[in-house]
Image 1 (tube, rainbow, N blue to C red):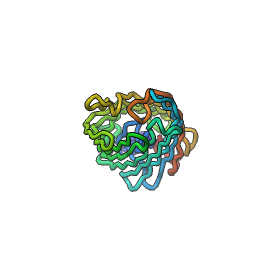
Image 2 (cartoon, helix red, strand yellow; image 1 turned 120 degrees about the horizontal axis):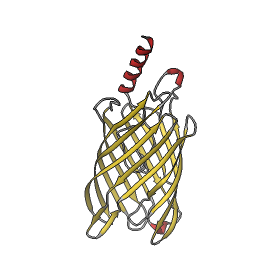
Image 3 (cartoon, one colour; image 1 turned 30 degrees about the horizontal axis):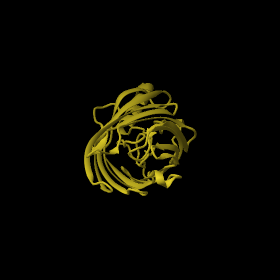
Image 4 (cartoon, rainbow, N blue to C red; image 1 turned 45 degrees about the vertical axis):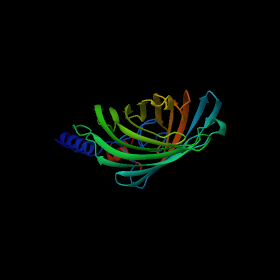
Amino acid sequence: MMNRMRLLVLLVMLAATLPVLAYPTMFGDTGLVQIPTADVQREATFALGADYLPVKTPAGNTLSIPIRLCYGLSEGSEFGALIGNVRNNAIGVNVEGASAKILLIDEDIYGKLPGVAAGLRAFRQKTAARLNAVEGYLVASKVLLARGDNIESGFTVRVHGGLMYTSYSGAVDADFTKPFIGLSYLNVNSNALVLDYLPEQKVGGVILRQATVSAALRRRLSDHFWMQVGTTRAFGPNTTDTPFAGIIYRYAETNTREERRPIEY
């Protein structure tokens, strides 16, 4: 009887809130590599990340180190910031920006209800051919497969998808409404695999973003540090797919197994 009651309490806790990987995207909001998810940074906590990101373009090669900060403003809302300077300004992929996201619906890990969030991104390319962009999106995240109690054993596989509206100004004026999609695998041993896809943005023969498939392996190093390695297409329309590696520092309350809470992915 006690074991059944213990399992029931655990399932209620899991259904109430899904443990998530609060890892900033390349744009600063919580998500996969480039796409956002319906997860948000916890209130009064933050994630500070930087990645070693080589940039290869027809004009030459350089190095970008995008630095992102994602802060939990309140329960169910976050703010993100991005600075992505490069060594060679002639390449034209220096970017800076900010983002905000609010959680609309909490995900039910064992039910049919997905998590839903709405967000806003604004960023600009600071070098030659200056380009400004504002993006608004609606994203849903849902568990496809869950095994174990996610405390001492188990994993979750989730799908993330949504619709994003992008408005460009400056060197090019254009508007796009495009879908995006991604998958994530999260294991109780603190390993994570993420994969996402962004479609091409093209107007009048000018490509503002090439179709991009990004992937990353993430590993928890300690209570506060995570690392990732992967591949993505860097900022800018003429960049090519390159590998990257990065680390984040997360400031948050640490859940312990003795407290019998789901792990903080």
